[in-house]
Every structure is written in C-alpha cells, then in structure tokens.
Length: 121
Figure 1 (tube, helix red, strand yellow):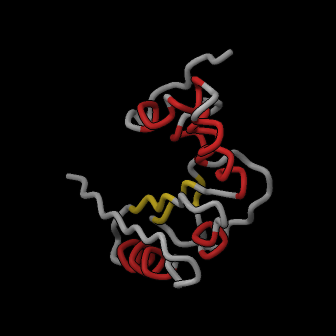
Figure 2 (cartoon, rainbow, N blue to C red):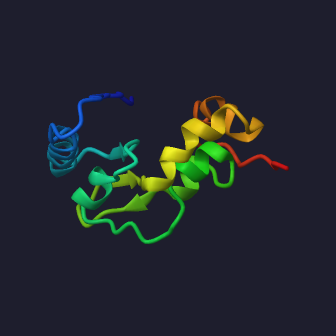
C-alpha cells in the first residue's frame, strides 16, 4: 500500500526544502521506498539530496511530455530514496502553459506518472 505525503510552501527564503528532505531521508532510513518530487525551480531539494543539476531531464521535461515521469527518476546515495529532479527550466512551465498545448496538458500527463510519453508537435 502506498501513501502520499505532500509538503508545500510558497514562502521564499524559508528553508522550505529541509522538511521534505529530512522526512524523505528518515523514511528511507526506516526501510521504506520514497520518491521525493522537487517542484521548485531553484532545485534545492535536488541538490539537497546530493543530485547535481547537470542538464539531465527534470520534472519540466515530464510536464512538456518529452519524458515520462518514470524516465526522469534518479537514485540518490541513500538506498530507498529516489528523486524527481527540478531545475531553473521549471520557471518556463508557467509561461509555456498558456501558449503550448503540450505544457497545458502537463498536469493531466503527470497524473498518469508512469505512462509512456506521448508524441508532441
């Protein structure tokens, strides 16, 4: 049985990446499988778990349909803790969503996180 725990905070400069990272690490250390989804364009949760922002596909690519969510998951150094990374490209998702059909259907695509990516034009 799976459980979803969501932590959201819009306040900038509040150390908002620490609680999700600590919770994810604690659960993984307790032998649970954890998927941490970084949805912050600064990608602080990504770097906070030791994953470099090195140009590999991120949640932004899944929103646009270039990759499935399953394809962008990366392992971390902590066994049982996987990550959906984010980077600065995520800023464009908001502006693209009003002009791009692929981006505007991104939330529907992410609601089917492990489906194969669809072709976009």
